Length: 461
Figure 1 (cartoon, rainbow, N blue to C red):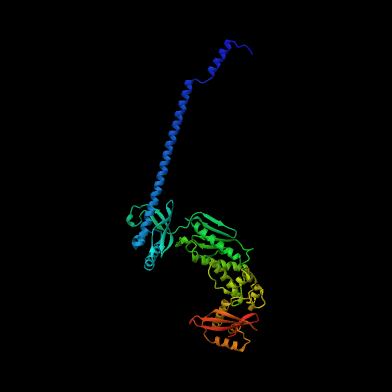
Figure 2 (figure 1 turned 90 degrees about the horizontal axis):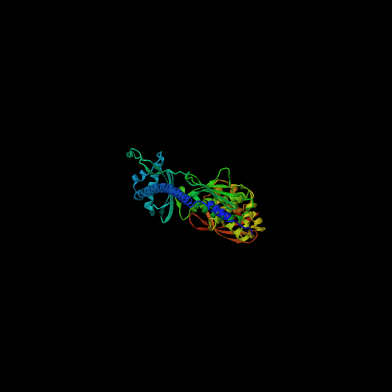
């Protein structure tokens, strides 16, 4: 341990004293920093106040614009409710007179509707979207207890110097602007893509759920391994008719329900479902049968149509009128329907059912022949009307003289429509069907005999 002299210790203390900042200078520097921070804070506060004021003013302007739009809609609906044609037409605006004529027709429609059913023009606005000078409004109306939504479009006009000309400023009801329908979007699943614009999102969800159910039901009966992916596109086009896109057999176009009156409780309504189901059933069967073109009047034509009807009725969830195909599905499993469709040839007879059912004769198939026999009776009438004697005789057991003579008697008469309501299989050689047919004009019934000849049911009486 070394010896430190007093002057060394004092020098070290002096060094420590001079190495720190002067307390007065430190306080001054801190006061400067505080003043700077206060200044920056004040500037930011002023800026925030300015921005907040601008935002608040913009929101107030937007609110005022929306409120003016809502007031306009209320007044327009009130004119419809009161039947004030002049007031209603005053809200309309377009560059041509066509829009005014359309709106006048719509006005008359409502007035006539009010005389026949309970019409409640509630005027309740379900949705409003404003984009600059244009606006889209979805509002409610209740027709005979059923809630509907109607979409109206508006444009905000600037006031003119001469308001007496009728060109007043403010919101005016204008023709539909289908560019104002939201952004493109889609819902995808294994077998289906639903393409839509965002305004139709709820419609797309309903379509996707229902059509996926139909595809699942179809694939339980038909082979779907090679089935292309289906695209359903919801298009905001009031002139569009539901149908397949030309050049793309698996892209189905359907109009948005909001281009007319859309049921709020069923955006994919029953009528639209029936149309889409029918088109889809026909397209699926065409795919499975490789676009089979059966001979006119052949059993193949009936069987192909019956498969389409059965599938369509399955989609609709209703009791089918395709009794023959339905009984085949119940007896041999739904897959038998697909096997039947695949087995069909342009000139197939009903004997093709033996191949599918695994039987050697039609009387062993245990099938419901009512719709098939009804079709044969109607085919008779068509051939009589066409003066096709040979075609008529082909439907009869013409080797039986009695049956042949009966056919010629019918050929020279005007037979009425008949529908087979029941039948009884009579075993024997050959087997026979005793059918009970109802005459459409009178409601009376008569018994008609069909005989199994060369693998076909032919009329014998």
